[in-house]
Image 1 (cartoon, rainbow, N blue to C red):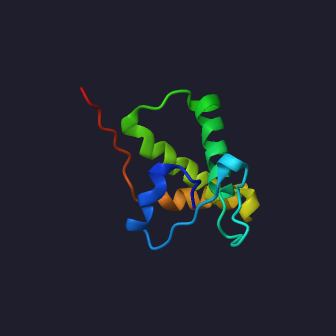
Image 2 (cartoon, rainbow, N blue to C red):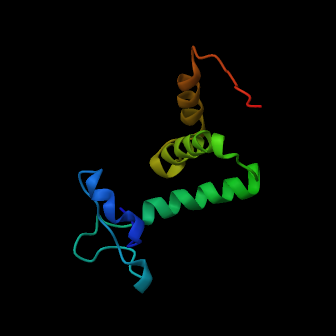
Image 3 (cartoon, rainbow, N blue to C red):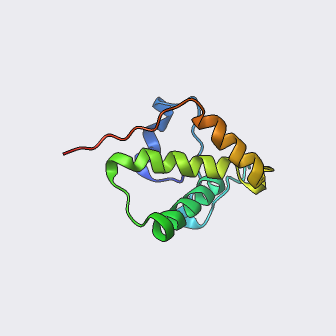
Length: 107
Protein backbone atom coordinates (compact mmCIF):
# COMPACT_ATOMS: atom_id res chain seq x y z
CA UNK A 1 0.00 0.00 0.00
CA UNK A 2 1.39 3.39 -0.99
CA UNK A 3 0.30 6.87 -1.87
CA UNK A 4 0.07 8.00 -5.50
CA UNK A 5 3.71 9.07 -5.89
CA UNK A 6 5.06 8.29 -9.37
CA UNK A 7 8.00 6.24 -8.12
CA UNK A 8 5.57 3.61 -6.79
CA UNK A 9 3.87 3.00 -10.15
CA UNK A 10 6.15 0.13 -11.16
CA UNK A 11 5.66 -1.84 -7.93
CA UNK A 12 3.06 -4.09 -9.54
CA UNK A 13 5.90 -5.55 -11.63
CA UNK A 14 7.60 -6.77 -8.46
CA UNK A 15 4.68 -7.65 -6.17
CA UNK A 16 1.48 -9.65 -6.57
CA UNK A 17 -0.66 -6.67 -5.60
CA UNK A 18 -0.32 -2.92 -5.15
CA UNK A 19 -2.98 -0.62 -3.73
CA UNK A 20 -2.70 3.14 -3.44
CA UNK A 21 -4.43 6.15 -1.95
CA UNK A 22 -4.46 9.77 -3.07
CA UNK A 23 -2.68 11.79 -0.38
CA UNK A 24 -2.60 14.93 -2.51
CA UNK A 25 -6.36 15.37 -2.01
CA UNK A 26 -6.29 14.26 1.63
CA UNK A 27 -7.46 10.69 1.00
CA UNK A 28 -5.60 8.18 3.18
CA UNK A 29 -7.99 5.24 2.72
CA UNK A 30 -9.43 3.93 -0.54
CA UNK A 31 -13.19 4.42 -0.30
CA UNK A 32 -13.91 1.32 -2.41
CA UNK A 33 -11.53 -0.99 -0.52
CA UNK A 34 -10.89 -0.08 3.13
CA UNK A 35 -7.94 -2.52 3.29
CA UNK A 36 -6.00 -0.10 1.05
CA UNK A 37 -4.57 2.56 3.34
CA UNK A 38 -1.25 3.98 4.43
CA UNK A 39 -2.02 4.17 8.16
CA UNK A 40 0.29 1.27 9.07
CA UNK A 41 3.36 2.65 7.32
CA UNK A 42 2.61 6.17 8.58
CA UNK A 43 2.50 4.80 12.16
CA UNK A 44 5.72 2.83 11.70
CA UNK A 45 7.53 5.77 10.13
CA UNK A 46 6.37 8.07 12.94
CA UNK A 47 7.92 5.77 15.56
CA UNK A 48 11.09 5.32 13.47
CA UNK A 49 11.50 9.06 12.93
CA UNK A 50 11.02 9.86 16.64
CA UNK A 51 13.59 7.23 17.56
CA UNK A 52 16.13 8.44 15.06
CA UNK A 53 15.74 12.08 16.08
CA UNK A 54 15.44 11.50 19.81
CA UNK A 55 17.63 8.51 20.63
CA UNK A 56 20.10 7.74 17.87
CA UNK A 57 20.37 11.12 16.09
CA UNK A 58 22.65 9.74 13.38
CA UNK A 59 22.57 6.67 11.18
CA UNK A 60 25.23 5.76 8.67
CA UNK A 61 23.90 4.42 5.35
CA UNK A 62 25.67 1.09 5.91
CA UNK A 63 23.74 0.57 9.19
CA UNK A 64 20.28 1.66 8.04
CA UNK A 65 19.11 -1.96 7.67
CA UNK A 66 19.99 -2.67 11.30
CA UNK A 67 18.07 0.36 12.56
CA UNK A 68 15.06 -0.56 10.42
CA UNK A 69 15.17 -4.15 11.70
CA UNK A 70 15.20 -2.91 15.29
CA UNK A 71 12.23 -0.63 14.75
CA UNK A 72 10.40 -3.37 12.84
CA UNK A 73 10.82 -5.61 15.89
CA UNK A 74 9.61 -2.86 18.21
CA UNK A 75 6.59 -2.06 16.03
CA UNK A 76 5.62 -5.70 15.56
CA UNK A 77 5.99 -6.48 19.26
CA UNK A 78 4.26 -3.52 20.89
CA UNK A 79 1.51 -3.35 23.50
CA UNK A 80 -1.07 -2.47 20.81
CA UNK A 81 -0.41 -5.93 19.34
CA UNK A 82 -0.84 -7.60 22.73
CA UNK A 83 2.85 -8.00 23.54
CA UNK A 84 3.90 -6.83 27.00
CA UNK A 85 7.42 -5.93 28.14
CA UNK A 86 8.19 -9.42 29.45
CA UNK A 87 7.04 -11.15 26.27
CA UNK A 88 8.99 -8.67 24.13
CA UNK A 89 12.17 -9.33 26.13
CA UNK A 90 11.70 -13.09 25.78
CA UNK A 91 11.24 -12.79 22.01
CA UNK A 92 14.33 -10.62 21.79
CA UNK A 93 16.44 -13.13 23.69
CA UNK A 94 15.19 -15.98 21.47
CA UNK A 95 16.45 -14.02 18.47
CA UNK A 96 19.99 -13.72 19.80
CA UNK A 97 20.36 -17.11 21.47
CA UNK A 98 23.38 -18.97 20.11
CA UNK A 99 24.54 -16.04 17.96
CA UNK A 100 27.83 -14.31 18.28
CA UNK A 101 27.99 -10.52 18.23
CA UNK A 102 30.27 -9.39 15.44
CA UNK A 103 31.04 -5.94 14.14
CA UNK A 104 32.86 -5.15 10.96
CA UNK A 105 34.67 -1.86 10.66
CA UNK A 106 35.40 -0.17 7.34
CA UNK A 107 38.45 1.93 6.69
